[in-house]
Length: 379
Image (cartoon, rainbow, N blue to C red; front, side, top):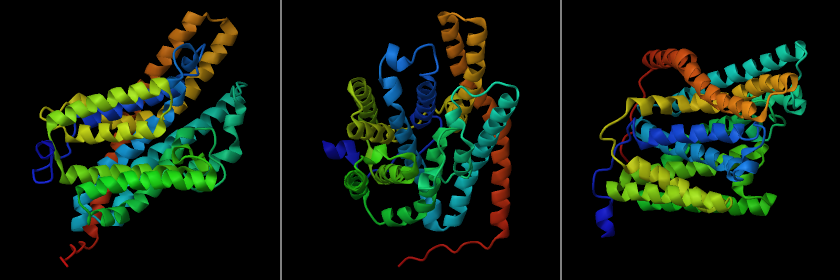
C-alpha cells in the first residue's frame, strides 16, 4: 500500500506556478503582516484575541526559510548540475533579486525618519531608530555576528541570513545530488535536530531562537531542510490524494499546536509536510491571480515594516491631536493592514518587477558575453 502512495519509480510532479505553493507564499506573507501589525492597534491582538498573534511570527519566518530552500532546489538544481549555470551566476542572480528592494526600503525609511524629525514629529520609539544600528542592516551583515542591525526594518535579518544560504547552496546541492530520496529526507531532519542540540549545548538556546546576530546559524539548517525536502520531491512520487490530505492534516495540526503553545519542533515538522505536500499536488489549472499574488510576497515581506512605521506614525499623531475613539482607531488599524498589502502590490508592479526585468536582461547579456561553461563529464 505504501509503495502505491509513495514511489521512487514513478515520474515526479514538476514544480509549477499558480498552484498551492504559490498560494501558500501569499498567505504566509499576509500572516506576517498581521504579526507585525498586531501590536499597533488600540490593544494588541495577542491580548484581546490570542497569544498566537504575537508568538507565531518566528514560525512564519521559518516557513519562508524552508520554502526558499525547497523552491530554489526544485528550480535551479538541474541547471547547476548540468553546468548550464555556474555557482557564481546563481549567487549573483539571487543577491540581485533581494538587495535592490532592500536598499530602497532601508534608504526610504532613513529618509522618512530624517524628514519627520526635522518636521518636529519624532519617532514614537526612538530607541528603534538608533543610527549606530543602521549600517549593519543597510549592508545586510547583521546575521553574521556583526554588531548592529536592531530596529529599523528589522525583518531584513532573514534576508541577510539568506544571502549566506545562497553562497552555500551550490555546495550543498553537490552533496545532495549523490543521495536518494529517503536519505535526503533523513539528512534534512537529522541535521536540523543536530543543529538544535548543538546550539542548546553551546549557547543554551534552541536553534530556532538564535538571536539576530546568529541569524545565519538559525537560517541555514531550515534552508537545508527545504533543499532536502526538494531532493525527496524530485525523486519520489507522492499520490496526489495523499498529498492533499497530508496538507490538510498538517495545516490543521499546525494551527492546533499554535493555539496551545509554540511547540516549535512539531510545528516545523508540520511546515515541512505542508510544503512537501503542496509541491506534490499537480497544478492542472494554474491560476494567474495566485501566481501574481505569490510574486508580490517578497515585496510584502520587505516593505510591510516600513509601511507600518509610516502609517502608525501618522495615526498616533492623529489620535493624540484629535482624541480619536477606539472604533476609529481600529478602522485605521485595518486600513493600515490593507495599505501594507496595497503598497506591496504597487511597489512590485511599478518598481521592483520592471527593475528585475532589467537585471535579468543584464544577466543574460553577461552570460552570452562570457565563455560557455563546460558541462561536467561523467565519472
